[in-house]
Image (spheres, rainbow over the protein chains, first blue to last red):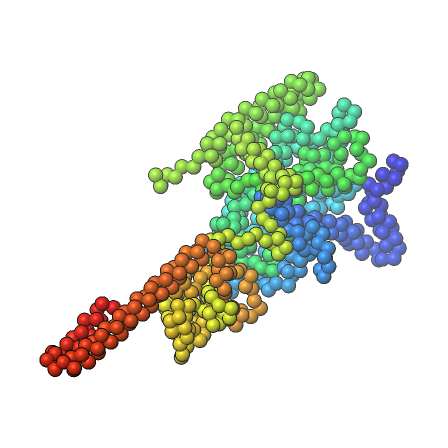
Length: 408
Length: 225
């Protein structure tokens, strides 16, 4: 029985090995690395865009329900009465964006305008190469630099966002791009600093190493996820906040605030290029969620040891879906921030909190073994809750009461 | 504390999410083509022409006075006056519109035509399913399509229609009163004339009577009418 579960768990790996071993005799030597790469990439290119497509429908349905509406429920199989609860919608949307006219503004910088969506999608897809989706399932295991590679490649999306905004020759596009740059650069710092705690604790930049570091078991059943520590919990919350800002999700969707600047940096994009922007944005969000899962939620590990029979990639996907649903829920709840609130939140709240969290993580690490667990928890809790309360006070006033200085 | 508001909001949206599945009363929208909400009394879309008789074309209240055409801000009304006249609801002879077109692609539903119409003839309809494959001809509505019965008007705008009916009833009553008064005056005049004739005849029989009495008697009877 255990072997069967093992086989299901490792099915993608076994399949790839089987294919490679059969191809080895048939294909020339130099093709084999390329084939291996292609076999690793194919599932990513199949699973995540499909997940994106389903997410668009689920998001619209979920937001509808949150607003006491029914949401999309019409599009099913064409020429029949089968409606699939509206889950045919993404196919219709895809076909529509494929056959729509691609309008390029006359004054646009045509080369850069064309390159921007591609330059956005490629780094986003590259970030997937280091994520461990399951046990032994990481396309590119970088033992020294996994996390660094993720952030380095992920940060280059800022360039393509600005390429899009600049080349469109449109005020709204440029404003959106400037907002996006300011926001992404500001939130990159808390994002990286909150991940740094995990690197400190695990002592490795390798993402597989970080997951394996969480594999130890407490009380005989509970896996040692980083989430189950004071610094891990706070770090995860800070990471999610910063990740939402990095992925331009509500409440940090200023770069594409419809009511202010139309669609931000992709105002001048239509048809399939627009779809690519949309895809890249969601894939970026999924990658960020995937990284959060790897760093804090134990990656492919189940929460309890006895649930280990469920394939590891199912755990990863399940956690990913849960985080996506959380982001949809947040989008249905929170209004958009103002630019000054956004910047103030990054520099005056998230940054100090991440720095304090680093100190707490260091204390947690130093006190390991010598000090009782309850005392460590109490110290960690106090050291995090008091600054949270103090830093949060100012923001509460700022967010709830707006002063109209020039109108009064 | 910072974050409590977010949590409260998330609880609220979660309640909405769950509630919308088991409590249909929460849903504010309906599934449109299958389910419809009756249109509100104050709703208005585009103008229509009211008719009173069975045959819409014969009973149009419109007398082609063209006030609406002149007042229409976007100039979407086009009227051609008829050459002949026909009796209206009061029995008065009136012109009627030979052509009455409204371009609903231009109309902005401002209702000014309704407000200026002295004949209670043009009113706002609530029909909204007007999409058309022909964006020029298909959106130019002719009087045949514009004509709607008064019953329809009563159904979609009951209060307004009652007021409109009252105005028309008052008009009819006034016209009848005037006709009655006219008839009485005519009878009085005829009687006076008959009397004058009789007097003249009597005067002719009596040579001493003054001659210009009958022309003076006729103008004196006229103001009485």
